[in-house]
Each structure stands twice: as structure tokens, then as C-alpha cells.
Image 1 (cartoon, rainbow, N blue to C red):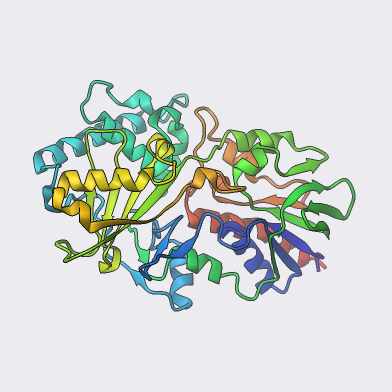
Image 2 (cartoon, rainbow, N blue to C red):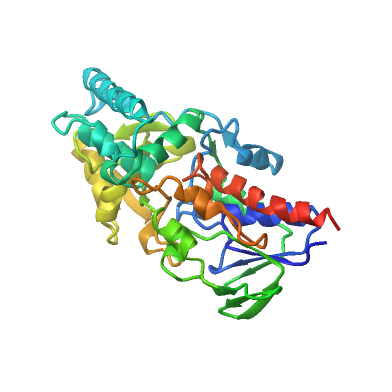
Length: 409
């Protein structure tokens, strides 16, 4: 046996790592600073009784996404209908000719970016025409996808994701976050335990935490890049390359506002509206997920940053929807909930993007130290970063050498 492994961080990556080791008969303890598991995968119940995802909500690349099979095996319900992101319900505020022009502008941007892949890394903003009327829409899409503006995102990093992703995006009726936390059933878990320092000076690793010192033979670190870059978790001896890599992979921001709807619904389940396709700051509105009388409004990048004040996102969403649907709709919407991921303790953001020139930081962050300290999390994934399935795969990958070393004894 390899002795005890401690996994630090109870998000998708940490749960996957601990589950892998536990199911192989290893001695493993999962510690999590929050009072719940899931990390950036979080399902909550609204006052209306409906469940929604504050964090990841779509099984991206669903046919190859391991959470799809995990959810089905655990009895969760998967809705395979399209999210309809490419459609504008009733063409409101986005008529077909403008939609075609927008799509053509995005295709030009994508072609120009991919054609430059063999050259040096550059910001995605290099591949849009600042005078093109659809550049604001492309920047808004960057906010949704990357949590950051085109100016902040690395071409090489973005292309790695784009080339690997598929267009099958499915949803879990009971919540994606519920699937992730359910996967921890039966594991040895301690919540409310914040790791602050890892002393790997000696054979036995000592992990200093808010509740005392924990000893381990191996450690898997599965925390957001903000924790490492900000020095909230340190190492002795220091690991400056890890801190630098984490700093090169900052967390962008994506937030959601949830509204209830009174009265009859004129649209089918999973209908979609872009609030204002001519502005950088606009929401992607998911109308009636699963046929429920709610709206999930999604904001990304600088737009989300600007709306993190309490109540701002919901007010903005209602204004956009009323502008499209008519003034009578204002009385039909009631704010229910909103996320503020930038303010989430020991998270401080949504998902990582590489700074320009730093796409290789993902590999640096993922590399193990002395065969005893391993790293996992969506930021460690070279192709599926920013997703729960990318986090899952890195957790499994971090556990694999521990299992292989155990097989030698």
C-alpha cells in the first residue's frame, strides 16, 4: 500500500481523485474548506421549489463527458435537448439578417484566429475588426465562454479548447452540482477544514489546516488557481513555479441571475434570447429550463464583473427582457437569486483562462512534485479547462500514479 493520501479541495477534481483512490481500496481523506462539497459545481433550491445550478450547468461535450455516465448510473435525469444558444426566440431584437451577419462575423474571427496558430501566441482581440459592428457580440461570447474579454485570452489556449470540444451540450434536471457532490458518497470527508501550508520537507507530509495538522504520505492539491496564486496555500520548501503557473491562469467570471415568471409562458422549454446583440454587456437568457416558470440569465467577463453588486444582475436582466418582450412583462418578473462568484471565499472566480503567452502554464501546474504532491483541477487540463469534466479527468490523472506505486508493493 502507499499509505494515506489527503486530497485538498472538494470540487469536481478533488472528488474524482478521492473516488478513484477509495474505490481502489486506498486510504484517502478529502478535506474541503467550505461547509459543502462541489466547489464551483453547486446546485441550489430556489424559493419556488425549482433547483438551479449556481456554477456549471451544462454537460459540455456530453457524449464523451464522464459525468454523463456517472449521472445516469446514479439515477439522475439528463435532458438532451439543445440549449438553443444559436436561436433567438421569435427573432426578438435579432432578426434573421442580423443573425446571419453576426454568425458570418464570428466565422471570420474564428478562421483568422485558427490560421494564426502556427505563429506566436496573441490575444484573441487581434483577430477582430474594431470597426465591425458585430465585434461587441464576439466579445460578449468570449465573456460567456472564457469569463474574460478577447483582450485577455490567449489564442493558443482558446484553440486547444475549441479543437477538442463538441457541440453536444446537455442538462441535468436535478442539477449538475448535485451529480458532482453525490459522487462523493461514502468517501471519508471533512468539510470546514482550510489547508494553509504543506510541509514536504520530510518523508511524512504535514498539512497545516484551520483545525490542526494532518499527516499524509501523498497529497493531491485540487484547489482553484486563486488559492495558489494568492498564497492562501503555501509550500515548504516553496514551489514558486506552481504559484507563477497559477497566476498565469486567472479565473474569469461568469454569473447568473434567476427570475420567476408569473402567468402563461409563450415559449417552449429551453428557449433562448440574447438581450442586446449590439452590446458587449448583454445576457444570454435561458427561458424556462425544463419548462419551468423561471429565467436563467447568464453574464460573462467584464459585464459580469460590473454587475456583481447586490441586485444589479437581476435588474439588468429584467430591463433587457422587458425591452424585448414589452413593458407589461416587468410586473411578471420577480428576482429569485443571483451568483457573485468573484466574492466566493477561497474561490474568487468562475473558470480559468491562460494569459497571453502562458498556455503552457497548464502543464506546469499539473506536473507532480517528487512523486508525492499532485495537482488537479480544471486549470490543469490542457483541452477541457473551464469544465467539470476537465476537472474530473485531472483528478483521475492525479490519482493514477498513486495507484501505480501501490501496485509495486
